[in-house]
Length: 102
Image 1 (cartoon, rainbow, N blue to C red):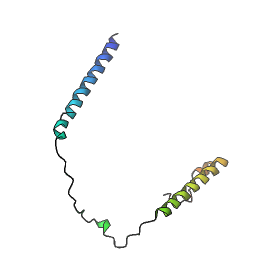
Image 2: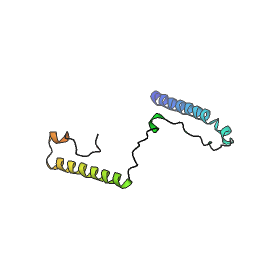
Image 3: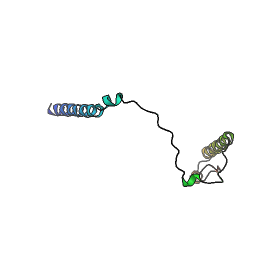
Image 4: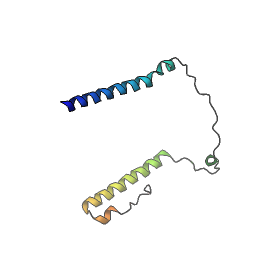
């Protein structure tokens, strides 16, 4: 019985402490509700050293990226099927032929 009462008192103490901390955290919310927000003024970002490259690569078309991803998925599926047909310890550590793998 004493253990039950101790657990009950500690639980109530935790609820009270959580309530006090929650009320302290949300107390400043009333003042912030009436503050009018302005849109940020547009500013020009400073030039960074990596953005000054004159020979930047042209953007890659979306279709080319999708084809690369599809080929990668096909190669991974083929590797998984090959492992299921003949599972060996060495086939787990073989690198795939996909160019997307690091």
